[in-house]
Amino acid sequence: SNYLQDPSAAIYEKARSLYETMSQDLNMNVMFSPRGVLMLAQTQHEIRGFQRTAQANAFQGVKTEYINAARVKELVPIINISGPRYPVLGALWQQRGGTA
Image (cartoon, rainbow, N blue to C red; front, side, top):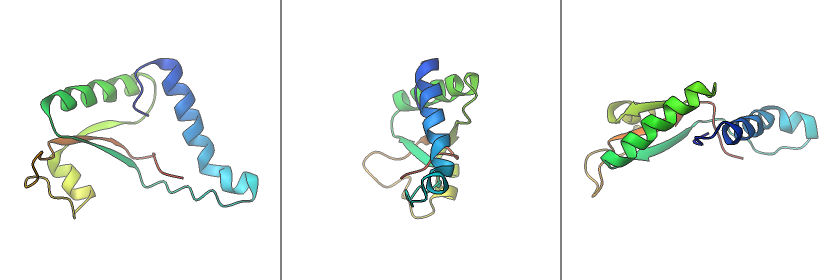
């Protein structure tokens, strides 16, 4: 969840939690993969925004953290954090997030 408003964060967190058991509940594979969600920061402006979002999510009970570039590299070893036109400076990391 990267939403700053309490109602938005609550509904998206609820939706995320429903995916955890949705395959069993529906007896159908919804292909939920809880591998986490990582949003890359490539500017100082994005860093400040992600830090703000991480704090807002913490107040709403959503476990999200801002991580530095070294931690991004640990999570995604294949990523080039210093060579691209816009180097990776950090990221917003929600470990319980995923894709479906």
